[in-house]
Structures are given as C-alpha cells and as structure tokens.
Image (tube, rainbow, N blue to C red):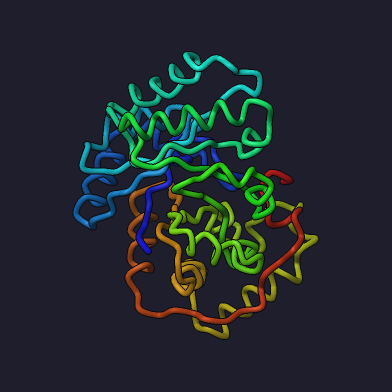
Length: 286
C-alpha cells in the first residue's frame, strides 16, 4: 500500500472539522513545501476532483508530471452529448496541465445506474484507448452502490471509504472480489473526515449520540498504546489488497505526521469497532 495525496482540503472548506485557519488554496508557499516533501518522500500519487473547487488548478500549477493524478469527473444526469462530456474531461486536463491522467473516475456512482450509463462508459473506454487515462474507474460510498452497477461495466480503479468504523468493504466480501479481478483499490475517508483523530470534546454536539462508540474507540487506542493517527493507519495497513490510502491534510506538518505514522512497522490485526450505523459512517448524513 502507498499513500495518495488527497486534495479536497485544497478547496479550503472540505469536511465537518475543516479548520478555516488552514486554507491551502491561499498558501502557495505551503503547497510548494508539500510538493517538495512529497517528492523527496516518494509520494507520487495525487487524488483530486472537479468538485474540489480550485484543486485541479492547484495540482496543475504546483505538481509536475512526475506525479500521477487520479481525478473524478462530474457529469450532469441529463447529459447525453458525447462532445459535452469530452469537453468536461478536457477542461480537467487543461486545469491539471496534463495530456493524460493515471485514473479518470466517475465521482457519482449513481450515474452508472441511469439511462445514460452506457454512453458515459463508452466515452470512458474511448478516453482509455486514446491514452487520456491510463485507467478508468468509479468512486462509491457503499459496496451495494458498486454491486448495483451493471456487471458489463468493467473498471480498473475503485475508490471507497475504509476506516475503523466503516469496514463494509471488507465485511461485504467486495474487497476480495475486487482483488481477484485485479482492480486497483484506493481507500478514502481513512480518518472519517477527521472524526477518528479528535477527542470527544472537540466534536460537534451531534456526535454525542455515539458517545459509547467513541469511548470504545479511544479505549481500544489506549489498550493498544496507539495514537489516533497510528490506530487509523495501522488498521489500514493490516488490510491486504489496498493499493493506495488517500490521506487528507491541512498543512505540511500534518502530512509529515501521516508519513511518519505510515512508515512505522506496527500493524493491528483485530478490532471490534466496525459500525453499521449509516448516520455515523456516511458523512453525507452529517
């Protein structure tokens, strides 16, 4: 497993715990330092999206072609025009200052259930054949989202949430299926938008209803003598088959902490922290 730089925070307002004091989209010097540190640390994958306002431009301006890029595209549900979809993709390439990307992903998996799914898939395949994207894929929130998609749509990459509370990719058996089909797996939301890195008193009141779940989590960390960041990353490293862990951060110092934790040897094999409560594990409900 390798690290992938998550750029949602580059937009300046991502996540329920986003610290407005850290606005990477306004701090070119900090991003330059992040670029150099990543290069020296051999972190060469970047995850971005059209929906992360301004992030593709930042990647294009600050990260050279020695970095591989995965970007996620937004397509209107009613869009049937091939030219319009291609123009949308080409705008991303223009912002990224690249002729091609490592991965071109559909950001909203429900688009692959609509009447225009076959047309969109055909265009993705064409992008792959023309070398615009080395691989094509999809981002989804739950294993069922992926399983509902027509099996004739073959993807090279999937991006899905995986963390100590959200272990659905594993428990559903989908992880093993993806591995068997040699699909590249990118785990995102590994800190559950920062919830797993916080003390309870730092969380909004709405999380009081999960006081026992959070207490169990912090007790587990204490029993294992782990910091929150080490707990999250060591858990992910224990999962065989994940290719990239997409990590979000608000500063160079945070990225350095993640990198340091990632390079520790300790791997945790067992925990009983998985939750089936979608109101907790799906940030869209917050």
